[in-house]
Length: 201
Image (cartoon, rainbow, N blue to C red; front, side, top):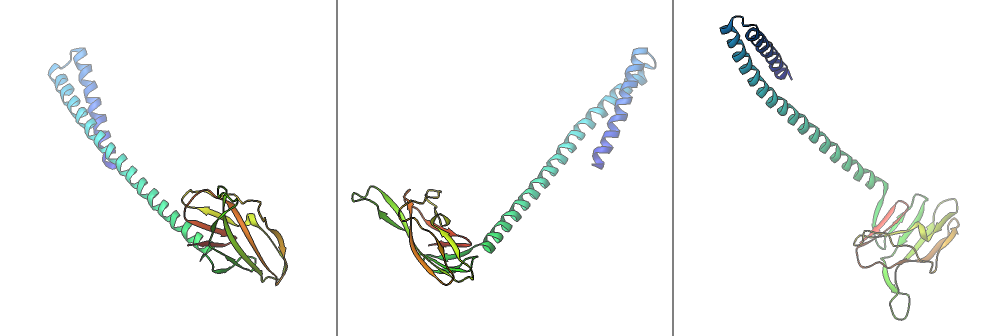
């Protein structure tokens, strides 16, 4: 910025010199001096403009590079914070393992299986088996729609079907076993999420 300021001052004085030379030529005063003012002032002004343009473009490029670097660092920091928060928020389990929910319930989810819903096998569904034991001091309400099935291959959440739909209150110390069926949308790696728990292969 200092260099750009100095070049700007030089360009200003060169411009003034050029104007004085033009005025002298117009008034036909000191013709030789006027020509020298015009030629010198014009040359210095032209050079100053070129140098000024180069310095300004360099400054802009540096500012852009710094801004890009800051944005990349900020983005990387945000991603790190996101994954740290994700790891803190969820307990990751393999299918078949038991985990404790935020409601102090022990939950177990089986690996999803593809089941035929008709004799021809044209209508299919993903099926999971769920076991929940209420270890808390209060009843908990559990519904099939509380369990989210995600298909990585399709990048989508299949909808819960009405077949054997579960929606019950589980009293303290009681255990509930039920199946959940989801609309079949194709092959792909599957993941089940419930509360603060995630099951995957």
